[in-house]
Image 1: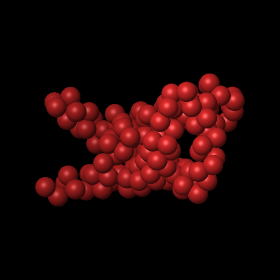
Image 2: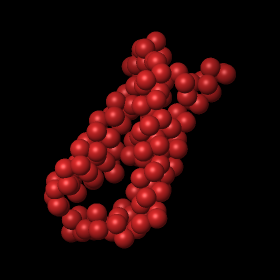
Image 3: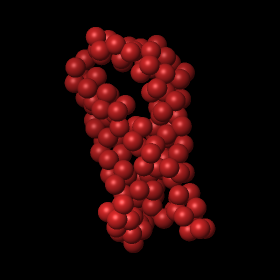
Length: 140
């Protein structure tokens, strides 16, 4: 618990607008991907096809779209950011594996890797000063 408080204090001292814009852009990107997957489930079925031998395709499909949709909103507003990112990490690892095991689409692989790296960064950094989390914490 002390380590998390130390990281939070460091993050609050070093928070500035570009990181907040990056967090918001990540949230909007994930939100749009969630809408994309909800509107085009056939595309999501085709993406999951290389992992068909693992099983649970329908569980994955019903997890990916809502997690991106809700998680993207939470990340953009900076509310429960670390929890929302924890929900995104298995999806992003799956996206990287799908691109590695299936048809190699370099653009999708780069986007999945960049999104994964940014998510891991915000998992440790937190939501920053200009977020709902920070506002709620300061009202206590």
